[in-house]
Length: 124
Image (spheres, rainbow, N blue to C red):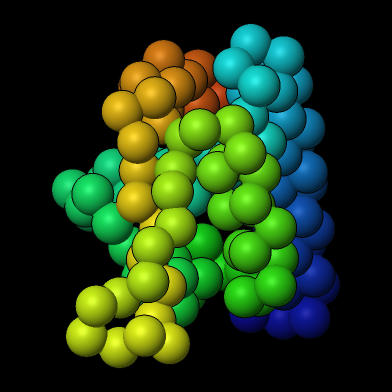
């Protein structure tokens, strides 16, 4: 690829990202009281069929720093969607556990999330 094609591809990625993020923020926030990162955390836990997820593994999955993830988890915990617990085998390790309410909110928001992704990324 020449420089112009690479830059054009980069601009396309940025435009799709911005469009997707705005649409997801609107849909998830207005209808389900979830931020995009909050939904992503719930989605990763549910997609991996886990009741609990180690914080470091979750940070890697959702591409957030540990401090940003801590803030997201704190909001989810305050909303009753997850709980935090200490690992029995390694007291330094912290697990994030999804609650029944977290699973229910994720299930309710999932069709809207996937509809936004389909609308942005479906072939024209």
